Amino acid sequence: MNLPRPNSTRAAVLVPFAIVTLIWGSTWIVIRDQLAGAGVPPSWSVSYRFLVAGATLAAVAAWRGEWRGAPLRDRGFWMFTGAVGLLQFVMNFNFVYRAEQHITSGLVAVTFALLLIPNALFARVFLGQRLGRQLLLGSVVAMAGVALLFVREARGDPTGAHETIQGIGLTLVAILSASVSNVMQATERARRYPMTPMLATAMLVGAAMDATWAWLTTGAPVFDARPSYVAGVLYLGLFASALAFTLYFRIIRTIGPAKAAYNSVIVPVIAMLLSTLYEGYRWTTLAAAGAALAGVGLVVALSARRPAR
Image 1: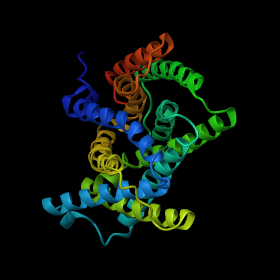
Image 2: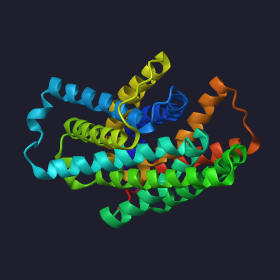
Image 3: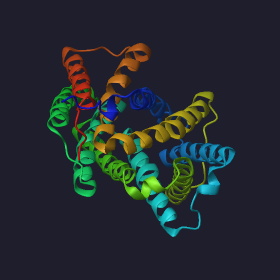
Image 4: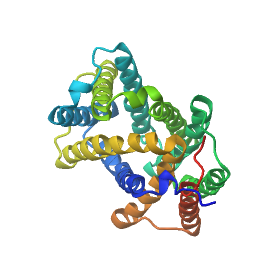
């Protein structure tokens, strides 16, 4: 019997999957530039990013007339968007930005590839989804590649052991926060809410939380007028947040959080390729083998015929 082609190999999934991966593969360089700027605390940079993103999506939703269908009087809507805002746009990104103050952006990116593990576990526990044999095989191959990349990046990290442990620890907290938010997008409650108004609200609520936290912990707003910083805020807000999260959350709703998390496995490979072009990154046999395994694991997993149910 011929099994139907899986949703994850259709153009409607592969194209946005590729767009999100390419965009997020470039963000590590931009974030590093922001951290190296004129003393803007990470929490303020995160606040500006999601203020731009949330305002953009709110304007798009208004232009499309989608706010009329948003359940703004539903307390459950505000609880849901508040939780997404806290987990995805406050905790996740504040911990990632701070992790890059302790370890290299490459090591943060590779560590974040572990998102695949909690996404799969939480999807099994809370959504009843399971890893089929082919998806499990792809996961094993991909994580072997991630392990090789991790060893390569850890060896090249100039920080001491204490800094490395602290940076990886912050990244792991970010991963758990992002994973819970990812799984929330695959629930029936999430599907009842129109995507753009839901995401705009979550980002604006998250930006308000970020700004409150930044003001309480670092003082009044600080901004860097350098053209590269302003361009970075706009790029991270418009493309890496407003566009990428809209596409990514739709991917999660289509193929589930486990398969969608393979995005995080390929992101460090894209980041390394861009670093090769713009920063003179030198590939080693270990890094090349890791990137190849990550790619093979992605292909194997996304071509799995049976849905993870």
